[in-house]
Length: 144
Image: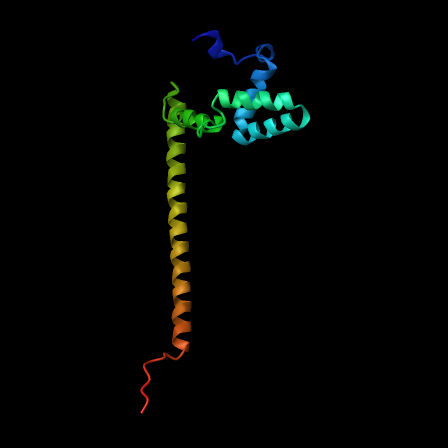
């Protein structure tokens, strides 16, 4: 393993990334709405800044892309790591057991929701039948 994988980036490495890079990452993490809000504020307070943000958003295709959210990419990456081995057999066994337990709890909860919906449907149907039984049925009338 390299030194970079063993130690996370230090505060000094964070300071070396530029302000604009950190601002871009911050806006990306919050989605397209944050970019649009920053652009509108740029136009309000200093119109060249708003124009520069608009040009950057169009140039980088942030304005028109649908799946640019950092959260979606992170979720996919973390979902993949849930099924890979860590190299530690005790931890992998613990992780497998925890995931199995969570899946069982999810199935139990979904079964509970199904029973709840069935009970609600039955109660609504019973109420409908009671209302229907209480009203006289209007049949065809014959006039003589």
